[in-house]
Structure formats: structure tokens, C-alpha cells
Length: 326
Image (tube, rainbow, N blue to C red; front, side, top):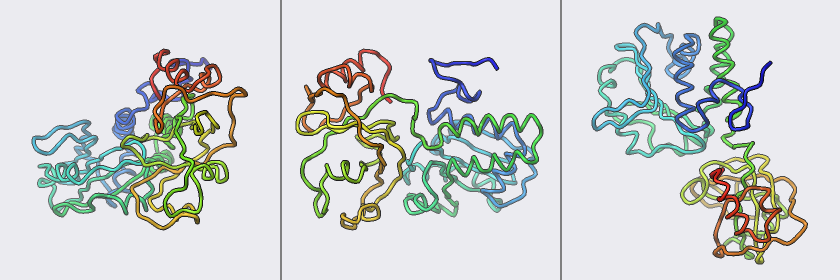
């Protein structure tokens, strides 16, 4: 079969042509729902627990309503059902003010007495999302979490009774989701270089360096000034130079460090990524820190850390190539 490449990478699914950003995922989902009655039925059945007729169903993308925000996806059958999907990439969840805007939609009034819901779609596990949703009910409107993996499972089940055309679309969608399910760009050669302190976290019986060297783990907050999506590679610098590079083999999210480290006190934090790291590797020659402030975190392309004498020079060369960050 003839191979197709996009920016040098093999295109596995027609949906990959859209891209891998949040909106691209959302548009792909909505298109598949519109093209596969079996998928649409399964989606509505799994989220509203009803057997839909699919009469007069409209799917809207990026729909704006005065004082009620802009929704990612709306699925409506007037007088029968109404669903809003707020889609997020990674372990992000919307705030209460955003959900309150959606709950003010006129369609919720029009479907009063009929099944309706706001779905928060993310990579979060159901247990994590339930514990961290900003609200589960606003003005009598139920707000429920759903994961991308849940959506993929609905698509898999829908293929069993689908037409050949539907099966092809759903197979393309599952291939697309399969490459993005972890929301970690496994093809990226960008390295997130962070600084490790030489001390021990307050109340812990394990130093920052030991967490990486002995446990082969690392953690940081989700979002803010930290990545919202896991990197493919992470590197550590301390004592004035690059010490090790690791592939991020897997990751999870926690909000109590004691759940992951017996040496840590039990505390309630915001969501944190926990990375499980590959064995360390590094250039054979010393790579000093260079012109980076002490706690600074930078992105470098993997090969530049083997080409340059300092991390700051590797960062600068990576940026000069003009390929953006991971």
C-alpha cells in the first residue's frame, strides 16, 4: 500500500490530517458521530441511559450563545435529548464558572423533563474526575465525567452492528485515538530539562535526587508553569551540569504523594504528573548548565544535548531550528 507522510511522519488515519490538538480531537469525534448512527446511538445510550430514535439530531461544533459561552460539541434532538460535551486534552478539567455558563443554555430549558447532561471529556480516570470536578450538578443539570478511553470503547462496540462504511470510519477514529490516547507525544524528540535540588522535600525521607536515581520517578504539577501534557523525554541537571536523560515510559496523576511514595507524608496537593522513567543515559562528555537561571526549565531537542557543550547552547540551537517545542 502506498505510504503517506505528513511533515515526515506516517499518516495512520485520515483524522491525523486534522492534527493532534484539542480541537482536532473534538472535530474528529463529532464527525464520526455524525457519520455513524451506530456510534451515535451507543454514545447517547452510554451517557444518557436511553434508547434514542435519532430523529432530528443536530451536532454543533463551537456553538456560541450570548452569556452562555462557546461549547465544544452539542448533540440535540429537540424534545428528546440535549448533551453538551466539554472536551479537554490531558488531565485538565473545566472550572465552575465555565460549567455555569453552559448550564444557562436555552436548550436545557427546552428539553426540561427530557434527558440532558453536560459531559466533561478528558483523559482523567473516572475516579479522579469525580473527585475533582468543580460541580456535579448546576441548576438541576447533571455534570458527568467521561474519558477518551470510554469514547474509544463505545466506538469499538459500535462496529459490531455497523455498516461497512461506518466500520471504516470507526476504525480510522480508533487508530487516531490509539496514537493519542495517553496524550503523550511518543514521537517527539524534545527533552524537558529540569533542575533538581540537592535537598529533601519537607517531611520526606527521600531526597529529590534519590527520587530520580533510586525510584526512577519524577513528578510535577499539571499545568500552570509546568507542562499540561507529559513529555516523551525528561532530563535532570544539578551540580552545574546535565546528569541524566530518561525516556518517560509511563505516567499517572496523583494528588497525595503518600499514595505513591511511602517516604512522603500524606498531603492534599493539586493534580501532579508522576513519571516512571527508563534507565538513565547521557552524553559521554560533560554538558554544563550554561546560561540558565538556577531553577530554570528548558526544552532541548535530544540530539543537541549530545552536540553542544552546555544545556543553554543546546536550547538555543533547538530554538534556531524553528520547530517549536514538544
